[in-house]
Every structure is written in structure tokens, then in C-alpha cells.
Length: 430
Image 1: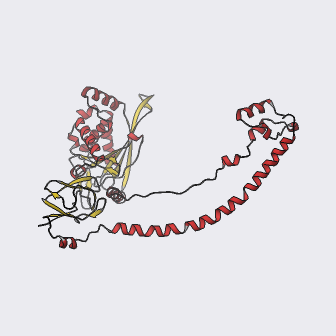
Image 2: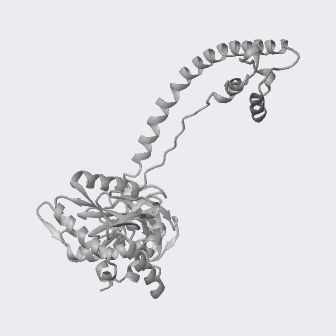
Image 3: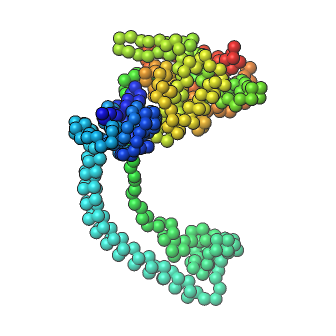
């Protein structure tokens, strides 16, 4: 009996999936547990295993095409089995997008521009400019060549002319008895001057387009929903980083593990959230859930956009564990190898653009979280310490909060605790 394989729901927000790659073709034998295809969701690209033994009788979606969740993507059964009824009963929504996109644009864009642009410009430009320019230059030259013998020129003007490579015979002096002076050299313009300083631009407008990936469409939808449904407000704080710089250096030397500043901040954030569960919360229309566990989302940039793998129970993990997980997530995120469980369930998110030299920025809350922390670059600048101006290192943090769950005082107390951890990093280890 033929078994139908539908587009799976691989994440809680997935509404459609893109078939990135088929590992089998029609007629191939398939075994249970064998990788059948790669499916791109709104968050990652994942390998999809077959749950059945048999022969691949039908492929319902081509590579690169998108289909809604639960639509038929393949049928596995016995060789020669009749599956026409199954195929006819399924009305996939896959083929609608290309038709509307292809037919409307070429008609309006191609036919109107050539008619107006080609016929008017050449006539006015070509016939009027050459005539006056050529004839006046010739007159100037002829007056200079009539005055034979020697050319009157001041020593300074002669020196400037030699330095600039100017032929003084082409210059009409403005000094006494036609003497060439410095002013004449400075204001001299060769006969072909306009040709070099005012080139006729031959510019052509150009652009290109790409189809929005499943991930890009999901990012657009979710961030727009967050921005327009959650009343955002922002809290900014600047921290002294000298202690954390020394702490990191000593940790690397003693433990022989190269942790990053981001790892230390992730741990400090996790400990702060455990003390302030109101920031580690989720809004519902009839209730607010305060999470006592901390699942820290770490924003990672990938080619298609942004993905947020989650460090589960991050407040209970030490720095080497957090370092190892974040590094592994970042590597697999770029190769689209994260699993659904690794990108779901965050209770708070951090986003770091400090490595790009960005000093401060604001982020959009990654719902259903109630807040997100934006981490800027470490900057060296003058600061006041013990009533003296000294060179120090600082970093700016911006906390974006959903005002439905996190009040200003609540967010401020969270940042105060976070500041204490970061400026006194030894407390992270206690």
C-alpha cells in the first residue's frame, strides 16, 4: 500500500517549506531512516528521513519550490503500484506564485522607454556645442602666433608653467605689454579642458532581484508582528570593561580555553535573569508567564538572514560549556544543520554587533520573549576614575522591553544587576 509523505511542520512557526534538495529520484529504492530530502524552513535547513521502506513512486514538489505544510511532497509504495487517485485528490498550492510574477512586469516596462529617450536627446546635443568651442580657440591661438620674437613672462609664471607642463605660447598675458604673469598660469585652461572636466556621462540604471527565501519571509513577518504588536521601549547603559578584559586574559591563561567577551556576557545575562524573572517572561492576553528557567537565545547572522539558536538552562552552565555550545551553534547555523529543538524555546535573546565596530544599536524583540539585549563594541576612551581623567574601556548595552510585561523600573533593576556582574566578573564564578 502506498504511503503519502506530506510537508512536515518542522518548527512551531512554520507555515510552508522549501524543498532544498532531493537525495532520491522517482524509481529509487528507499529504506526507513534513509535521508530523503533537505527541507528549508523559516529557521533552518534540515534533513528529512523516510519513515517507510519501498520505492519512490512520485515527487510532488521540485527542488527550490515551496509548498504549504501538510501538502503531498512524495509517495512511497510498491513498484508499479497505481497512485493516480492519491495524486488527483491532492490540489497543491505550489504552482501559483511563478504565474503571477512572470506575466505582469515585462509588458509595462519594455515598451514605453525607447520611444521617448532615443529621438530627442541626440538632436539637441550634437549640433550646437562643437561650433562655438572650436572657432574661438583658433582665434586665440592665431593672435599669439602673430607676436613673434620672444614671449614676455615673469620668472614665477615661467617656473609654474614648467611645473604644470603648460605651453606658454598658448597663453595670452594680462600684464604690461602682454606679459604672462602668475595669474595667467593659474587661470589657464587648455583647449580640450571641457572634454576632461565635463565628460558626458553614459549612465544606465540597473538592478536585479532575488526570490525571498522561506527564512527571509518568516523574518519579515515575525519582526513586523513583534514591532507592531509589542509596545517597545529602550533602556541604555554604559559599562566599564577594564576588569572583564583582565578577567578574560587570566581565564584563557589559566584554563587554556579561549572564551570570548560574548560568552562572559551571556553567562552574566543568564545569572541576572534568574534574579529578575519578570524580564524572563512571556505575555498572553489573559496572563503573564514568568520563567524560572533560563533558555538564552543567541542571534547568529547567516547568509539568508538571522537565526537564534538557544542555550538551554544557560544559568546553570559554566563558561567553557557556554563557549562550546555557542561556537557549535554558530558553525552549524551557517551550514544550515541546526535541529528544530535547538532553535526553539528561548526565554530571552542577546544580539551582539560589537565585532563589527557598532557602538550601540536597538533590536526588535524576538517574540514570545519580553526583552532583547543589544551588545555594542568595547571602546577605549577617557573616563573619570577616582576624580581623575584616565584612559579606560567601555561598552554600551541597550535593553529593548515589551512594556506589557516589563516596566521601566523592572528593566532598570535587571541592568543594574547585569552591570555588577560584568564590572566584577569574578562574581560570575562564585
